[in-house]
Image (tube, rainbow, N blue to C red; front, top):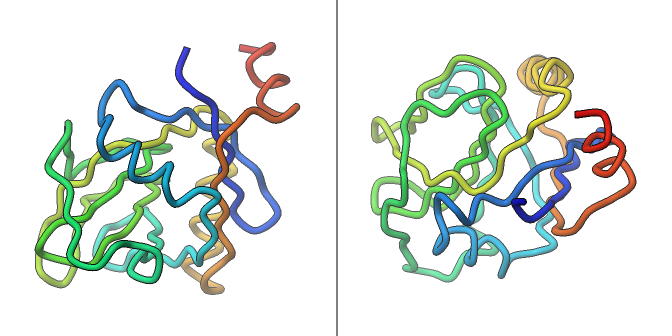
Length: 153
């Protein structure tokens, strides 16, 4: 079983899984930032996705190699980008998208997967698009919400 995490966007909490199986170096780096708190804004160049800039928490000049990197994440995938083309960031996909910045396409490493309540995730993405940024919190560990979701699956 993949390690558990919680992603809170505003007041809504999503159970997630840390994807060490796909991007072990990137997951270790993300874990070093835990608990992560930041803002989640709409990713204007990427389509149906939101992003959280990591520059304030990221070691200056530190880059990550590609690990199963993708430009086209599926809804519920969370990518970590720390390359040379743009600032370090997390991208949370909630619908069709192509990870990009003003510098062009970016390939991010998959570090988390939200596996439940993707319809609510899409609603929040639309809300962020129309109303602006929300608070983002990411923590490791399992909550009662995670156990309830696992028991229903």
